[in-house]
Image (tube, rainbow, N blue to C red; front, side):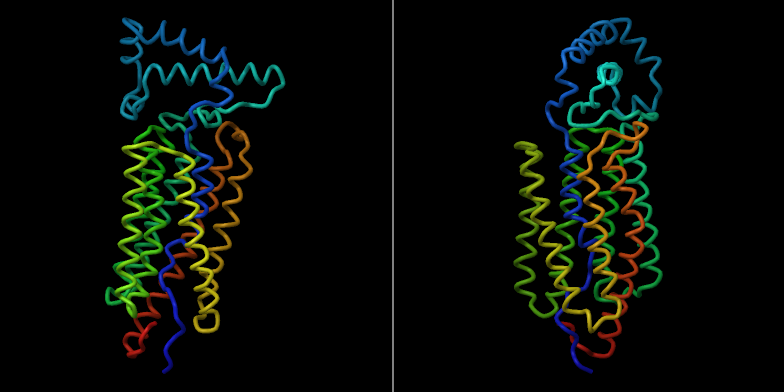
Length: 331
């Protein structure tokens, strides 16, 4: 039996990184937006904080605040900003003006403690889809498959990323933003590492060197964002760069294996779907019903892709296992 064509076998959401690059452009917090620059908004917040967030009024606020709001870090000042945001939005609408953004975000109707309820729910559903398909992968693919442990490791990274995405959209803070963005970049780097692990079957030296380089890039990136400066332009550039490498690499994989592997089209379709769906981020419209913005719609649209993606991973892992049993060397 002839050796299969040169190949890279574990996709790990090949287009996710490029989609995330657009996602980050839409959700990261900006110092000032039109809404929070308005004097009426700033005066409203100052007055609300002065009246409600000191002394007896503050104790009354804290005693009346639901436990889930306190646990997620909502403060009296946050509540003032939320109420004054809607006051400003009402004035804009009354004057016939377009709804402004506040602190880099559209105004969302808060549900319980969820700051962006639709995006939080969509992130949770993406994580559940990933978990469901991981369990299916484990029940279908024997542990002896060469990429079994690699796929499991990537899935755990993905689950962690979706978890922090859910937390971030529940409560946007500096810490949750760093964790979410850092883990999504980790997700993208892991995709490249999976390719390198497979290539390492033939060229372990090159694979190891590039793998170490990726780990250093990721560590340096997260360290800079955490301890030096959360530079949004730099963060987006890093994600776009890793995303483009993922995209080109996996398109190359699809092209090389289109005549060898009957399931190659699943990889190609995942690439096209995720990149096409990422264009939803460019719409950037005010939330429908104050809940569904372009970012939430993007997250919701990616949920079904997990099922196709893991279907590919299962096919590819079983192929690798069968070729190993037959003594075929995978290049």
